[in-house]
Length: 468
Image (tube, helix red, strand yellow):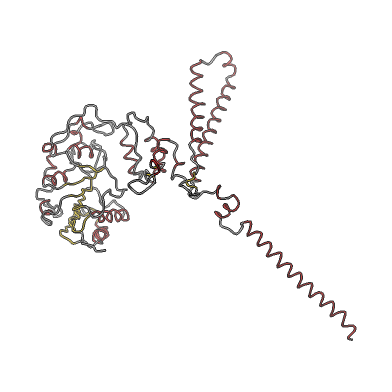
């Protein structure tokens, strides 16, 4: 029994050792394979894989591949369109072969065809390729590749020159503590690329086009700030000296001092509220000085109409500088100027020359949209007054950002004057919360009906002191 069992036990022992050996071999091969795949970079993230296989010189942090791709695709489309146009021309010539044999193409017509249909598209495509900006080494001893923001998003060379950072001369740090100056444009400029390139298409040193309305459209759409231009601004050919300051405050400016080409009206008389074709709807009586003289100085039957003298009496002698945020011709600033208070008036030319009128009255216009942060330092304004512009059409989130910006520039003890703000009655609680969230002290607060479903709100609030 023992002899017969020995060979069988021996065989089983050999098979066991073989299994152990094969298992060990499998583990070794698996480990080796995993190490090989790891070494090859297959377990890295996408960006790391690119770095691993192609090296750092081919992968650039911050390089705008999308813009580059769009530029190349734009060039390819131009070439394809040119090819299709030439093929169609050849096909048309083939159809009219017999007629062509009897006639000859005039030399000037042939030249015009080559210039407009062949040379110009080829030149445009060539320039587009030439202007593709690849990343470059930046900084001494810094091997990081960087690309200038948005550089490949535009074709017009003047835009590209503007947004390219300008190095200080002699490689010195400037008074701002930087090695270069970065010119800025609004981030949504890429969404109105065609209009911006039209705006920046001019001859350097020559007269600009009369296109302020295009500039304003770009600003309103968020392409703000706009790039500077290197052309000469046009003015009225018959420009006259402005009236003396005491006279100009309450007198319409000379018609010849305004460029009227982009307005429906051609003189100030046309801007009367009685004219239905005046071209604007906000502040309809703003160009009628006799009516303007009555604002903020004469009593009204509405509780929401406050007088300037009553507001200044809240802080005697303390209101010196302020901001009037709205649509108008500067009447609020004119009244305050008579009381030795300097007011800056925001203005957009929404169908009428609001900015020019404010300046010609001897006041300060601030050409600004709702989109931008106000260009004033913190805690600098004694008064912010708003009327006729910020109403119930404004998105709550946008209004919240605007109010916090006003809070930023208003000094402690300064006054926020909300003048005849109106909204739907159902939205009043939401807007009241927005005005009261800063915990300003209430000096005046009044609500009055404007119509069945719309109400007026006027208030004068004082910013409290805040410790750090």
